[in-house]
Amino acid sequence: MAETVTEICRRAAACAPELAGLDGATKDAGLQAMAEALRDAAGDLTIANKEDVATAEAQGTSQTLLDRLTLTSSRLEGMASGLRAVAAQNDPVGEVVGAWRRPNGLTIEEVRAPLGVVAVIYEARPNVTSDVAGLCLKSGNASVLRGSSIALNSNMAIVEVLRGALDSAGIPVDAVQLVPDASRTSAVDLMTAKGLVDLLVPRGGAALIKSIEDNATVPYIIDGDGNCHIYVDEFADEAMATSIVVNAKTQRPSVCNALETLVVHESKAAVWLPGLLDELAAAGVEIRGDERVGEAWPRATAATDEDWATEYLDLVLAVRVVGSFDEAVAHINRYGTANAEGIVTRDLTVARRFATEIDAGSIFVNASTRFSDGGEFGYGAEIGISTQKLHARGPMGLRALTSTKYVVWGEGQIRS
Image 1 (cartoon, rainbow, N blue to C red):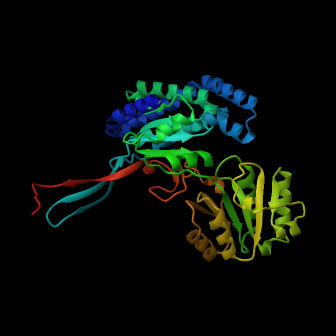
Image 2: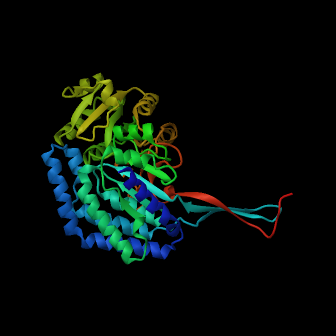
Image 3: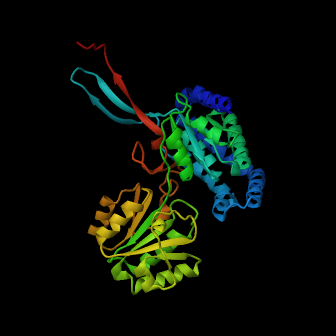
């Protein structure tokens, strides 16, 4: 398998210069062809996906993973729409970020350029396959995809469709490749493809992230856990807070931008909080709260320290009552995973302090954390959500898949 992974990466690296030189119209035509091909092949893709889902169900896979794995007609349409949205965006490659002229007559330009080969290791969600392929093509990069065993049939079918579309558009088919093995060995081989992979993005759980940290010799950006919080401030509009919290927890609890811990100012605990928890419980949410939550809503299970640090990805919510804004910020910065954090408040000063003092890639003021998503940010799709600070942070779109280089224009100048 090491030879297979190496060969895949070599083919990707070999076509990377050609991809970097494609003009925007050619890339957009390829993206449109990929979108049409997905729509035309929806029946075949559904069959392949149902095979994966049936196998996963027989193995006792959790409902959370089954939800991520399943390709519905709307999700397939969303994959195609995402590719079209990427095609509609401005091409970042060749963009002059800055330019200046030196006293010696040299003109220096900082120009946006592709990274080269982008590899992504991901779990369960086959829609990631088309998202990554589309973003990488538009940004002039070759993509190497390594999905999980649970979605292997789905991913293979999707990649076959995408490569066929690329071929019809006159674009090298090795711009999109799938590692045809989901073993740990193949993942480590990809992590250690130094000199061939320019950026690795892991999209998975703690075990995958730990493996990356222990083994990777290629540059990587962590797409980590989503232990997301919402702080309901003493100045919050209560109806708004209820709507936002219920949406953030229940609209799709299996994803990384769903709410996991609710932090509530003590002024809201006695009157507003019980009604909210009634509504959440009616929606099937299990409540785990601290002592003050238990006093306000006796049906809550007592929360432990582990609950504050847990990304449930399920209909479970940890709830804590705090006495001040500073206590809320301290709790969120201690237990948060730098993905998405929110506040509900009518006080602009408090909102600005929250945005400044909370350490996260995305801050939401009076809005659900469920908007922490490349598609919702207008990127069409996302390569992942960076929970670190170099070189990108938060939902990663086209620009996160480029770097810059300097192009210096002269007229014969030499340095003395």
